[in-house]
Image: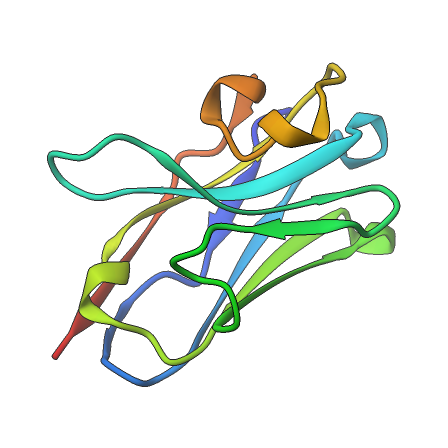
Length: 125
């Protein structure tokens, strides 16, 4: 199965934490991977990305609150989300790219061609 599989989404109250996980079977073939989210009525946006060297990039809205990490032995990608806010409510997607792209565009959804089905995160105030 090539499609990533996300898990860990649920409903939580603001200020709490949540850990999202993703299994990416093509992990070894991807130069970079990331987490994205899409709220109702809004475009999909990049949240955090990581490349094979461990270089990470975060959206301004989550910098300092979210942490992306990877476990190459388990083909897993994680997103630790702390101090959650109601505006973090969205469907969260794990994505990988089977091609190279410049680092400055890797937070853009168009830079990815392999997507999971998503996991819903709802944050209440």
